[in-house]
Every structure is written in structure tokens, then in C-alpha cells.
Amino acid sequence: MDTAVLKKENLTAFLKSLQGVRLIAPVAHKGKTSFEVITDPGAVTLNLDDYSASPKKALFPQTETLFAFKRERDTVTIAPAEQAPASVVFGIRPCDARSFVILDRLFDGDFKDPYYLNKRQRTVLIGLSCKEPTNRCFCPSLGGSPSGAEGLDLLFTDIGDEYFITVITDRGRELLEPAAALLTQPTDDQKNKKDQADRAAHEKLLRAFESEAWLELANKCLGCGICTYYCPTCHCFDIQDEGDQVEGRRIRVWDACMYEEFTRHTSGANPRHNRAERLRNRILHKFSYYPRNLGYVACVGCGRCIELCPVNEDIIEILDRVRELNG
Image (cartoon, rainbow, N blue to C red; front, side):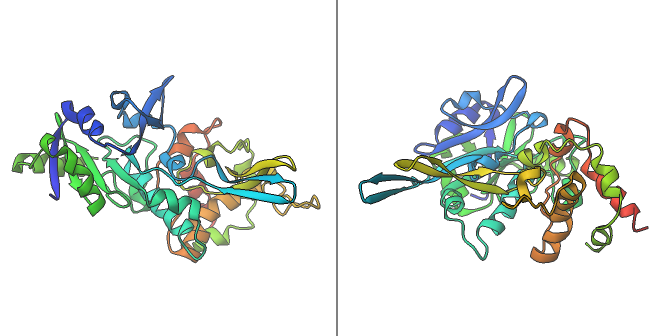
């Protein structure tokens, strides 16, 4: 079964059919939507206009324990992190699915990150096409699409009273098997509706490295880091030990290159001591260093940094400003 149709009225029943897995899906809370572990499939909300937080934390938690330790006399016992539960992340936008592809390349590159890969290998990703992309989205500029399937196992497309399901991987196909009674084969009309929904929905940067424009652009920036924390592809982290000499744990926590402490050395020296240098690094990291060194842009065009910035800093305007410097 490469395609199927699910009536919207059966969505809750479909989610309930996902037995034995941890379900992570978008839920609304105080006017904002975020991805959370849920036990009631009826709580899922699919208002794509209001996805404030990305699903990144499903595979790369903001804080996670790497291991715990305990000393007893002359013996130190190490308790490794628990095995990640089998999970399904439902309702991902195509841009967020592409962000996992970027994180996969990072955490499964020359150096393997066992904590990320443990969760990634046990997680199925189900996407939902963007029916009406918001005015902050610019994924097509970066090779994406409101109906893109990259990184997903299943893709749902809203075609009115039903969802058109595209099977992308064998894992996605297996996930549909318990819900077979809820699914039908698409008609030609439903296929047409799906197609209509899809249709509706380095060097220049490097030459600007020493430009004073970074100072101008940084004047507006507060350095709060909200752009990095909500970005689905930002992945910087710090490792800390909590506890005392008897017992404790080692944790990994998100960090942000926009923070003054990010590059500060123990000596007190800081190679990026001002905000302009930190802003420059963030932009060049995504749009120059990554393409040059790894062959892809580390941005998926989700637009969260534009929507959530408290001083209305716009990454598109920053890129346009830098390009202007080069004629």
C-alpha cells in the first residue's frame, strides 16, 4: 500500500491503533502549540499556523541525562542512559522533517552520537503537508516544499474531509497495518485533490565577513537566543555534571551561539566578545560554513526565528543586507 485515505473523523481511532509506542504530537496550551508526549489522542491539534515549538526535542531533548554515577567507598558505579522507547512523532511539518535530515547528518557523521541515534532509530515520523503556508515560511527558497516528504515515514495531506496518506518507508507501511480497517484506497478524484493541494501550498557571504554591517544588524539584536532555541536545526549543547562527590549525573543541555558565554574561555578570553560577531557566526554557520564543508544549508525555512524574535529581526532581511554589500 503506497497510498491510502483516512477520514478525518477516524483520526483519533488511527492514533489509538498505534499500540505499544510513545506518541508525540502537537497540543495547544495557552494559545501556543508544542509537541508533547500524549496519552489522549483526542488532544491532538493540527493547526499548522500555530506551531511555535519544533519537534526537535523528541530526538534531541533540551536536557537529557547521559549517565548517572554513584560512589560507594572505593567503587564508582555508572548507570547508562535508559533505552529510548519506540516512538511516533505525528503531525510534523515538512520543513521540520527536513531538519531531522540535517541533524541526522550531524549526529550520524564522522562522530556518532549514540544518544541521538538511539532515539532516531526507534522513532517513526509522520508528517502533515502545509495546506496554507504562513507568510513567514520560505522553505522553497532552500529546496523544501510545503508537501515535501524528505525525512518522513508517512505523509498526510488534507484533502477536505479526509487525509491522503503517502507511504514513504517500510516503517511507515508497517505502522498502517493495525489501522487497515480504517483506510481505503484513493480514488482518482482524491488523487487529483492531493495534487491540487500540493500545487497550492557562499562566497558572497564570506566576502562580507569583515563588513561593518554586522554591527548595524546586531544593534537591534538582544542576544536572547530565542532564535536558536526554537530553530529546528540548531544543535549546540553543553555538558554538565550535577550532584556531589557521592552521586550525581552527567547531562547534556541546549546551548546557543548567541550567548556571550558560548565561546568564553576559562582564561576569560572570548573570540566572539561582541554581539555582531556572534550574529555573524550564526548566519554564516547556516548559510556558508555548512554548504562549504558539508554540502547543505542548515536552515529549512520554517520562519520561527522571524515570528518569535522580540525585536522583529528577520533572517531574510539580514541575508538580503549582506548580499547588498557584494553588489
